[in-house]
Image 1: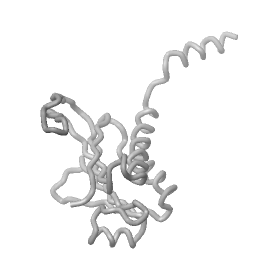
Image 2: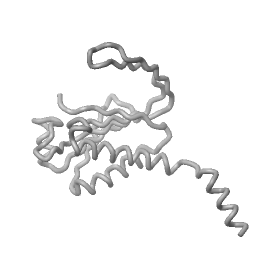
Image 3: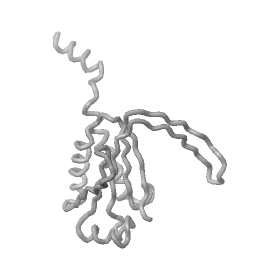
Image 4: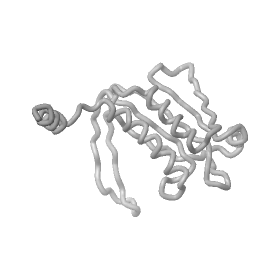
Length: 164
């Protein structure tokens, strides 16, 4: 199996479709002829979306033989999986390189979306992986920031300007 999974958790109420549309638009600036395929799982609910991206038909066909292994330019097809989750209750155990326990985190969250992106190599080792990962982050965070209320300073400054 090739590819590395990176998992992000974000607010449940963001519009997943808008995030994916924005991501695809940003991707077109890197790959103008990008192909997008929705993978459907008949056993899956509507709470899950899986999108497979490739640069072109050649890369798409290459995936059958090489998986997510990068080409000579460091690029590869990649997969985004977005899942709405009602609850997460997990323990994350962290270890040092020698295998000794460094810590434990107990995570309890409700009403969120899990975004998994499968990339060809580590973000620190592959510019393409890093670029695609950050495109997804920007697309998600743009959707979140569009919903945020304006800071109180906005209203205070607006009130001062209105009085002048």
